Length: 244
Length: 112
Image 1 (cartoon, each protein chain N blue to C red):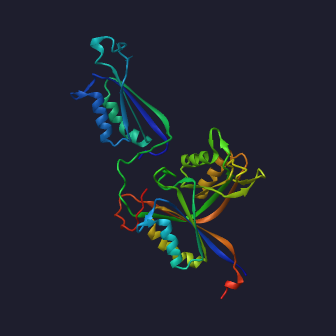
Image 2: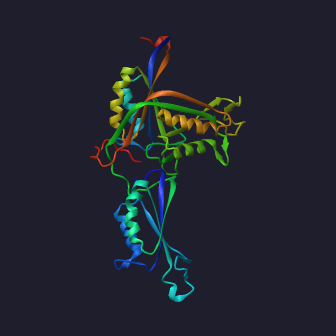
């Protein structure tokens, strides 16, 4: 299963007319990759190019326009790629195979229809609660700082974060943060609360420290019970009716 | 009058769109707390946030889907009774508990 982090990218260059057991080679490769359960593969037809035969394939020359280069690319784990490469090596009788180490930054899949209601899974254990105090008008480049922090936390795969706006307060800047008729500027106190394991919170605190201009980070220990949706278990009773 | 004692604070993180028995889940949880005579519960609505589904929860034009946090304070034993009940009502979410010192200030005249 492909996850975020280090992975391998394989690129195969073949000719459009190359054959493999009386079918086109690129079709055969794609079918093989799908059969092997590769996370995803893309075949693109090049505009022009040349290969080891030193013959230019270009759409300008009518008779060669059906023989353009095809590039097939897929990304998967190192183990999966090792499993697939020997067969791929056999199949590509005229072309080139290239393997690169790569880094998967995001792997998102939108489910085509709402997921059925499933029983939840329970995770329990000690955890850390982090509260970050800042001002509503604090900015990070071109966006509100609290938005930027929440985005950063999501990228770090922190379990969850909630942003609160206080009614009144004062902090590092020393001025009272209050909204009134005479002070229409909005610089109300903002608090972001984040709960996760102590290692992940330590990493998150370090990342946020670099973003805060003046603010406060408070850490405390909590006992956490986390209910996450479980996959492929019996349907939950109607009572637990949540819609997400 | 003033009472100081060790207590436990429970925070329940859910979404505003979560429902239980035809009403918002946060209302159902607070009603359950009253039924079990828990000392106190407060519901906060967050500006924005995300959780288990990794979807952003913020206010939409037609749909309120902001994060909700319910803060509940009582003794460790009472909360231990409450947690399994609340867990049954929830589908996804997070419960976090921490030890606190509670100082309770009450009007003396109300003390029967």
